Image: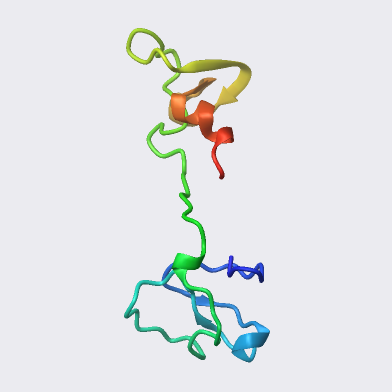
Length: 110
């Protein structure tokens, strides 16, 4: 979100207008420098920059990053943990198996 406003934008796109931009769209603060945009105006004065906000990592469970393959535990993946009574429908389905990353996700800032 645009800091302090709750306006959502990320990367190379135009943020929805806010009062400081005259309610016109403007480049997202996290857009790469030099990005040629088609937004209605430039960033509002006094705007935050990408360095004003804390780093954030967005993750998806792509290729079993957060979950482990069902039935694969020790010795190949000793940190995997089976979550009984929770079904995982991906890759043929089975009982949910969390990888070490998936098990520790709640302790991160995300």
